[in-house]
Amino acid sequence: MTTTTNAAKPTLDEIRDKQRDSWNKFAPGWKKWDDFAMDFLRPAGEGILKEARLAPGMTVLDVACGTGEPGLTAATIVGPKGKVTGTDLSEEMLRNAQDKAKKLGVASYETKVADACALPFKDGAFDAVICRMGVMFFPDPAKGVAEFFRVLKAGGRLALCAWGEAKKNPWATTISDVVNAELGLPAPAPDMPGLFRLGAPGALAGTLEKAGFREVRASEISGERDYDDPVHYWTMMTEIAAPIAGPLSKADDAARTRCRDKVVAAAASFMKNGRPTFPYAIWIASGVK
Image 1 (tube, helix red, strand yellow):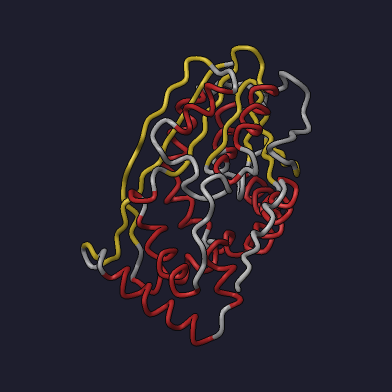
Image 2 (cartoon, rainbow, N blue to C red):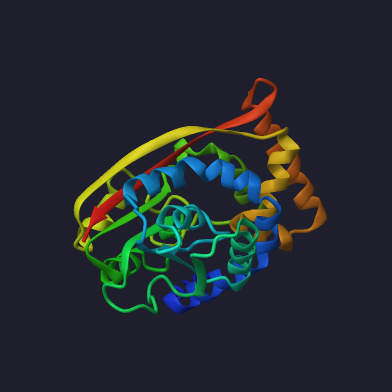
């Protein structure tokens, strides 16, 4: 007789700590690929800044800021009389952001290690809150968005984004489908952190509405991201995508080689003008406190 034991669901603290370790581990990869990644994410950042409606002198919070954008661009908008604070769980990612700020000479930018679901700021501390591609990874997105609401001033704006549905983002699923199948990895539970956790139509906007935001609106933007060749795609994704790189680091050489060969073959099916070119879709949402 076979007995099946269900593993205990991780606590929010355990999820947060695991994410901190993961982002710290892969921060060097993000630094290496920063130019490429920031070019990919530029439309999302521009959409967020447009919705945030920033002006000189504002105080802005950039949550899950990673290597610094779009907070660094926000700092150029609010100017020397304003201030942008970038927060992240990962100390190493914040070092990347600090290095970029110093290199760019952005004086109105600072960073702080912080949990998005328990922000270390007073009520009503900021004129605007922005968050690019972070909310779907929060241990509890609703709690995080409620924190955004708390730290905003009355009339302040929140602007954030998340990836759309999986079927509209083969840049991610092409490699993840292969690796998950080859290594026998289970699909993530829908209520656990993941790229497409808020990808369904209405999910992101609904999270803002439940937190109390008014004038909530959401729009989906789409585009394409190309790579030099299939091997370039494999190399970049395995150096920055923790859900891919983590399991691969524990696989033996033979399994890793099988994954690479299958991913390279799958990426080749997306060739356009001699380069693998993948569609993407992103939800951008905003609201007012």
